[in-house]
Image 1 (cartoon, helix red, strand yellow):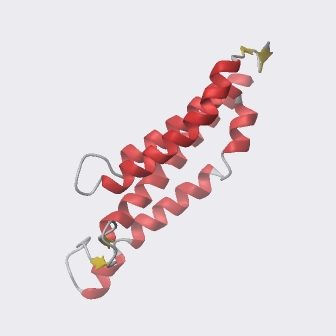
Image 2 (tube, helix red, strand yellow; image 1 turned 180 degrees about the vertical axis):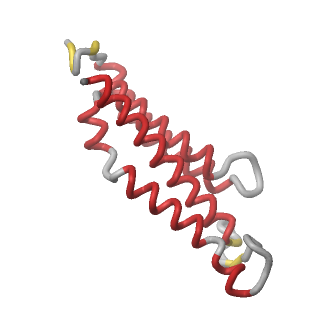
Image 3 (cartoon, helix red, strand yellow; image 1 turned 90 degrees about the horizontal axis):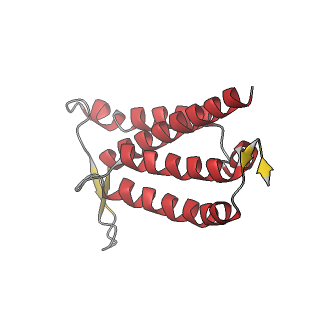
Length: 144
């Protein structure tokens, strides 16, 4: 069988559905551990984009666009706004630019949440949106 002019593998297509969810969960894990250990928004965003790229390779561009339920440009804008928002507390309090602020949640396994996590979340969305946009642009250009 062929789909979009490429060979279609039922094994890869089935595996990609499960791997998509696992890789997205792993990307969130990398995002959350990034402040104290290796990881963070950049690596987490790349892993999430790789999950969608794998799904695209296995199932074609139309199926991938159906699974990606967001407009890449909107997620890029949301990432930029989130990263910028993480700098505002330091500006409003008169501290040095990008000084970290922490809030203790009181929940043992979550601990403290702060502006570095907000910045990492913005970078996560920014990298995810840019990478998905590039992947979709290359796929559309290849179809032409």
